[in-house]
Image (cartoon, rainbow, N blue to C red):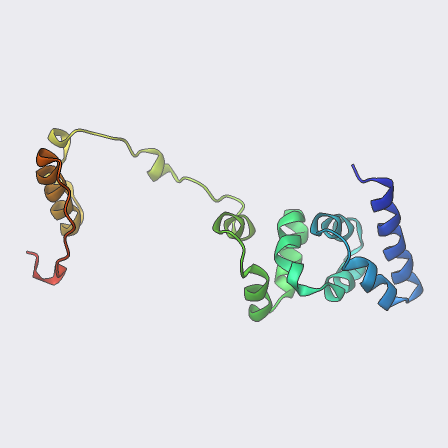
Length: 159
């Protein structure tokens, strides 16, 4: 729930925008926390939202995009060119990037089927890649001696 101070700031920005005092609105706006900016964007009509977005110090874009709801986020991201999107997402954590790009980020049904098994249960004939087979064989050999060595090979020589 917004504090009284936050409500006053948001009201001052709205009032400044409505009266045409853009510089005042910009100064107040850029002094807000990204979550407060997100709240303002979500509570504003689309035309005013676009104006607010354009007035923002763009160093906060990524953080603000993380805070707004999906519909507002999608509208804002659609209005941004590629350079702006890259700048907005620069420095964000991978998890945050995933949240921005896909609300359904997470394990797939394939990864939910993954399980541990013993070396006797390996289905050697069903391994998809020769590198996996080679790596597993090295692992089994090294685990017998409890001596895991670094190996570097040219995979084009493997047959």
